[in-house]
Each structure stands twice: as C-alpha cells, then as structure tokens.
Length: 283
Image 1: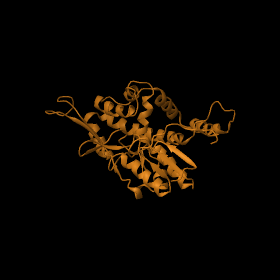
Image 2 (image 1 turned 30 degrees about the vertical axis):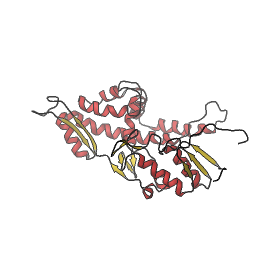
Image 3 (image 1 turned 60 degrees about the vertical axis):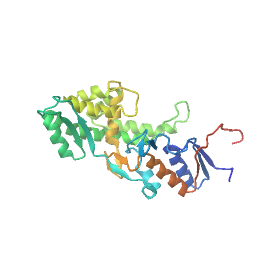
Image 4 (image 1 turned 120 degrees about the horizontal axis):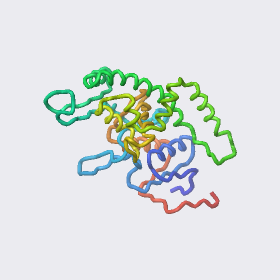
C-alpha cells in the first residue's frame, strides 16, 4: 500500500470528497481518511430503526453547484434528485377560512395553483406573493455569485484578493434603489419582520419564516435570518433556478455518488481511519 501522497484529505464529508475528486481529476495522488464507518459527514443516510433509513442531518439538495454535478458526472455514479413539490401546512379546526373541519395552506411548484390557494386566504397576499417572488429572484441573481468569491484575508497587505469585492461594489451601485434597500433589509432584519412587510396571513408567514432558520441556531425574530429566506430562491437543480429536491436514497446518496466519482478518478478512500495527529515538519 502506497505511503506517499500528493494530498491527504482529513474527513470524508461531502466537501472533502469533492476536494479529493477534483484533486484526483487534476492528476494528483489523493488519500481520504474518514473516522466513521460511513462517508458523508452531515450528508449521510443511516438506519435508525431496523429496516428504515433516514437522512439524519442534511435532508434536501439545492445549493450543490451544477458545475460540480457535471464535472464529476454524479448522475453516472448514482445521483438522482427528485423535485420537491412544495409545502403543506395543516391547521387546527377553525383556524382557516374553510368552514367545518381543519383547514390547510398548500404551496406547490405549480405557480397558478399556489396563487389560487393564497387567494383563498387573502387576495392582497396573493398579489404580494407574486411581487415578492419576482423581487427575491432578482436579489438571488445578484447575491448568488458572491458565494463563489474567496473571502479575502483582511490581515494581508496584498490587495489583489480585494479586486472581486470592488466589482461587487460596482454591481451593488448599479442596482435600482429599491433593490439596494431590500439588500440591506435582508442582511439585517429578522425573517419575521421582513415577511410582516409583505403579508398579512399568519399561516403563510409562519410557513415561509421557517425557511429563514433552517440550518441555524436562531429564531424567526433573530436579526439576519431574513437573508436565509433568500436561499429558497437561490436553489438550482440541473440548471432549473429556484429548484429544490430530495435525493433518492437519502442525502447519503449524494456523498456516495461523490465518493464513487473520486474513486473512479483515482483517489483512495479509507473509512474507520481516524487521524491521531498531523506532522508538518518537512512537509
């Protein structure tokens, strides 16, 4: 077994696996070391109860960059993403406009059906929802490229890494005044306060506010959570903007596909291989 590698990736989470795959694709000899028996980190599928497998941490796919899917040919290695149809919010008896039994709020990928559903609750909310969606898509198109910018080292005297930020500042100044104001609101306001500006229906605001705290330790009234609402509009699957999906086989199937891609490119992967220490002398 070879003992010398060009790169050793510690941790077999999906980020580490992507790094290993690209390094191997570039011709480097790569080793991935994962402490657990399964690859994936927080993107894993595990059997919690006998016969039942769950995505135990991350559970949806959307911000996985499409160029990674293409470059690593992940569908060839088993990646299959099922479109997420929408959200269903059941309500207690008497809490909605329907008479008799309990009501619900159902938002689906069919825009017309969603608008008709919202109009059943509030005509003004149905109208505002369309305007809100258009504005959030515009903001998502402005902000999403920022995710690909390497954060500059502010302690460095080298100003070259600051060049992309200068371009970002110019793009910001070119935005219409309203979009600049909304950008500031998204970065500073809570999800609850931001949605209160747009809608009057509590079940709608509650359902949408949940998107502002996914993956955080915050509440819907915490400042800054309005920005997380924007992730709902940044989603992309196979070139389809604003798309979210559930990976067939659970989120672990994403990591499995990336791992298989890395192996096919020549990387070596070891599970149950904890790292005791990292020796940097002479490296």
